[in-house]
Image 1 (cartoon, helix red, strand yellow):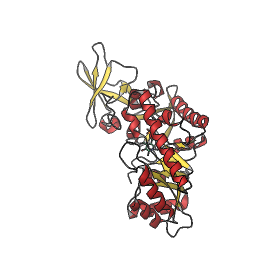
Image 2: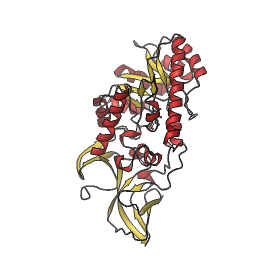
Image 3: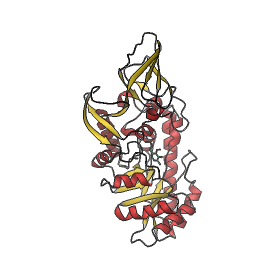
Image 4: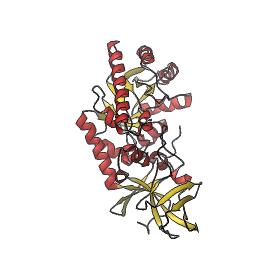
Length: 365
Ligand code: PLP
């Protein structure tokens, strides 16, 4: 690879990627649960297509612009799992909903009213799910508010209530696998109980959707969950490794970088800084990561500090690195790193076999 690439650059290991995709597709199939992966991790139409070909029922996004970007490549089943607010955005939602099937969430009266207004003159109602707070205290409501919102949505002919959903992000804060499973199970059970309550109020609740990579294990066995929306599983990263969700050998995404300076005996400087690797130390309260990535095959080397364009590597006492040497770094948080690159090199057996654009890179709105 080294004579073909300019660094820093993003690398995807195809064998690992396929294992990750196949395994999650198989786990959801075996559990009888649909898979609607979150594309925030890869932002690539080609990879979204691969997920659909492996049986995904649709794709999840955070941004409307991510859904728009992937729709331009023929992906036509999107769940924008984020409160859509503001007239300009709602105007775009209306346009997108004419071209593909889009669902989104409601977690307040204001959001519901905006969505209803946006699609008022349209032929089809807009499908919505009520978002519940699953312990992250981010967006989402508690089950009691969910009942009120369901009543409100039911009175809006422009909206069709399809289900309920959570993002069990608090699983990222629990490194102990048994306790993490218990957190995910409890949140999924609360989700299912809320769905039952809404059904007994007369609402048709088809979709009961939970989503996170560390939560999958605890969520899948819960009766009544109809779908999962993991995102990070396609690549995995040091966060997942630190949590014990997977081993380093399942990390499909890395950054190639070159040693550009050797300012002192124990130190090397590489051309991957914060602009490539990000300063992310782990999501949702995880305090497990100390550096800014793992150098593949070099456990004696630590990615100790980053400035925008430079990475500080600390070498163990026996370690050596030469200017010009290329290294591979598995990042802390794959999703954030992907957003820094226009394209990714796909490699198999150490050779570059394809280049994929990061189609939804930088989608902010
Ligand atoms: N669903 C929602 C709403 C999310 O915010 C996320 C991640 O942030 C996911 C699903 C996927 O979670 P993960 O990246 O842990 O797979």
